[in-house]
Image (cartoon, protein in one colour):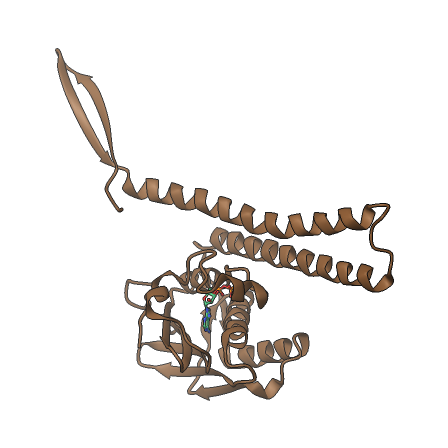
Amino acid sequence: GVGRHWEMAIHPVGEGGLLVRLADRSEARAAERMRVDFVANASHELRTPLATLLGYIETLQMANGPEDAATRLRFLNTMFGEGKRMQRLIEDLMSLSRIEAEQHSAPQDAVALDSLAAEVRDAIASARSVERDRIEIAVDGAAPVAGDRAQLSQLLHNLIGNALKYGRPGGAVQVRVAREAAGLRLSVTDEGAGIPREHLPRLTERFYRVDPGRSRAVGGTGLGLAIVKHIAERHRARLDIASVVGQGTTVSVLFPLPGEALSSKSHTIVTQ
Ligand code: ADP
C-alpha cells in the first residue's frame, strides 16, 4: 500500500502547554526502503554467480575432481562466464553511482548525436560480432545537443544493446536522430516481441526485468534502463518507451535544444 507515514513530536511550550508537531515522512521512508531494496538486490545478484564460481573451483580442487581436459575446459568456460557476469554488474553499479554523483552538474560538451550513434554502432558491431548493417542510422535535421559525451555514448550502447538482445533475431535496429519542435529526438526501434503494457511503468527500476531468465541468458544486468533514465534526467531530456506486443519497441529520448528547457517533467513513459 501507499499509506502515508506521519512522525509525531511533542514539545512542551510555556506554562504547561504542549505543541504537537506532525511531519509527513512518507517520501523519506520510501527513499529509505528503495535504498535497502537496492542493496539487497545488488547483493543477491552478485552472490548467485559467486556461489557458482566457488562451487566449480572447489570441484576442480578436489583430489578426485575431473581429470579429462574437456571437462576441465568446460568448467573453466562456465567460471569465466560467471566472472564476466559479476564484472558487468559491478561496472553497471559503478556507472549508476557515478552518474548519480554528477546529477547536479550541467553537461557541457556539444555532442553530435548522429556521429556518436555511428561510433557506437561500429563499436558494437566489432565487439559483439553483430553485422554492422543490422543497425540503421537515419538522420533528419540533426543539431548538436549540450551533453556529456561519455554518458550519451553509454545511453546509446544500452539502448542499441537492448534492441539487439530483445529484438527479432537477425532483425533490424533503427536509430533515428530527428529535429522536432520540442527538441532533438533520439530513438531506437527494434522488431522484437515487444513489452506487455503492464510492465512499461516499471522498466526503469533497478533490477526490474520482464523475463528474468531471458535477461540473464542474454547477459543483462537489469540496470541498463535505470542507467538510461539517470542519463536522460541529467540532460533534462524526456524518456519515452513505446511498445506494441508482437511488433517491437521504440525507446526515445527527447533532448532540449541548447538554451531551451523542456517542460518540467523530465521523465515520462507513454504507450502506443
Ligand atoms: P537488462 O540488463 O535485463 O536488459 P534493462 O534495464 O536494460 O535490463 O531492461 C530491463 C528489462 O526491460 C529487460 O530485462 C527486458 O525485459 C525489457 N526490455 C528492455 N528493452 C527491451 C526491448 N527493446 N524489447 C523488449 N524488452 C525490453
